[in-house]
Structure formats: C-alpha cells, structure tokens
Image 1 (spheres, rainbow, N blue to C red):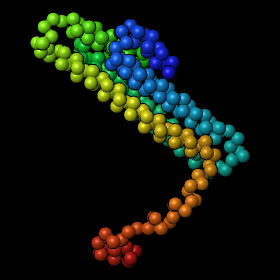
Image 2 (cartoon, one colour):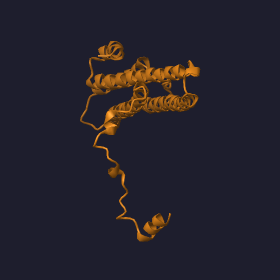
Image 3 (tube, rainbow, N blue to C red):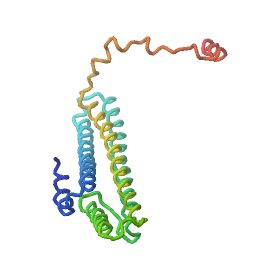
Length: 216
C-alpha cells in the first residue's frame, strides 16, 4: 500500500465511515498521483542521461553526441509537456465534478490529497443529508443527480488511470532504450523476423499502378 493511499486513508476515509465509493476513489486517485511521481522521476533520469552524453565529449564520436542530444532534447520536451497536458485535463475534469456542488466553489489547482478531501467532503455531506430525508419513495431529482455524480467520478478516475498507465509505458520504453547501452535485442536476429515477411503483396494493386511501379 503506497504512502499516498495511507495519507488518503488517514485524512479522508477514516473520517467518512469507510464509505465504499470513497475508498475506491481514494485508491484510484492515489494510484494516479503515484504514477505521475514515477513519470517525473523517469523524466529526471532522461535529463541525467542527456547530461552524461555531454560529458567527456572529446572522447566520443561528434556525430553520435549530436544525434543523441537531439533525440533526448525532443524526448524531454515531449514527455514534460505531455505530463503537464494530462495533469491539466485531470484537474479540469475534477473541477467539473466540483462545480456540481456550486459554481462559486474554489477551483482545484493542485492534484493532491488535500484537494481530493475538499471535493469528497462536499460529496459526503450531501450524501448524509439525502440519507436522512424522509419520504424516500418520492422521486428526488437531486438524489438521481448525486448517483450520476458517483458514476462520473468513477469513470473520470478510471479514465485518467488508463491515460497515465499508457503514458508510463511509453516513457519506460524510452528509458529502456538508453539503458540497453545501444545493444540490439537478440530477437531481432531470430528466424521469426525474415526479410520475406516485408515483401509487398502486389495482388491487390491496380494494373496501371503496377506498370508505373515497373517503369520506375
């Protein structure tokens, strides 16, 4: 169990009677935060690799130094901006849920346990109010809306878990490339990868195009 979730449990879950939805949301939110921390750390590793490339350049091939500098600069820029964009989208989605409880509510500016607590406390207090109402057999549109809010909260957190999981894989692949020390994986040379598998199938190519290909 991560430190983030333990903090979530201490500050939120224990104060809300171990509500099942809140436990689920805390787990998802904590997981997402931890994955963004991991992504930031991996980005620092990439920056460190770039710095190492630029050390002792007189002992390295100048073309190699230029090449790796270029692709590392591009990668660092891409991953750094990708993190910012994904986190901004996450905040915007949470703020839409936040505004359900009133347009004057303060926007969530940081993705942290304190702001999650700020959001879930409002949800929980409304849930308690609804559970104490009498004549529950009378249809209450607000209760229906609160049920929709619960579904939206689960969908948004699940969606952003999916986003950061896929992003993390891409970033990890980038790190794996540099950690391989330039060695090409042996499976590239196995019989399973044969040049004939890359031959173009001309059977579906129109005859006039085929003739043009031959002429060229």
